[in-house]
Length: 107
Image (tube, rainbow, N blue to C red):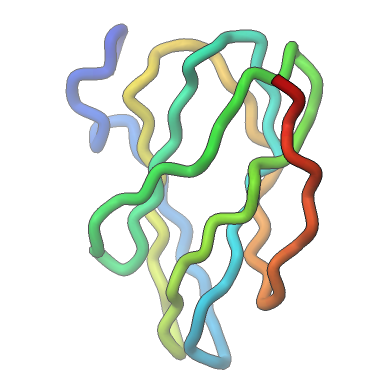
């Protein structure tokens, strides 16, 4: 999309996630960035996008605070978008049925 990202859907990515039970799951992202003011949004099953809590990691790998997302039984679609054009790397995303205890980032 090019900087700045005026059309976030043009650079979105999608995951299809099956769930054997409906309910609230907790999304975390393992990421690294050496830029401040990053953003990441996730829309679940076509609902309004919610901001994933990103922060400045000083280039180290770290995890976001858990974000509650509601999954349906069966197939679920998670669409991730960004509006920032600054580099960020993702190692993985995790959905947990119980809220993980992740230390808050130092400020």
